[in-house]
Image (cartoon, rainbow, N blue to C red):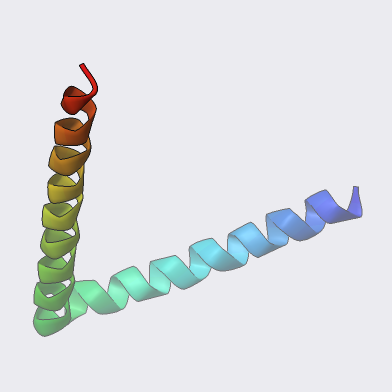
Length: 61
């Protein structure tokens, strides 16, 4: 039971930290732009990886 309580406390701490970070991001246009560029970059990399996986998969059949 103590572990569950500790995990709930850790989760609340994480949510508080995330909330504070989100507030900083919303107030800073440059930071918002940087984060959006990074998200876009990660999405492009993921799409390339998915295309490569699909291409390799179709070679099997």
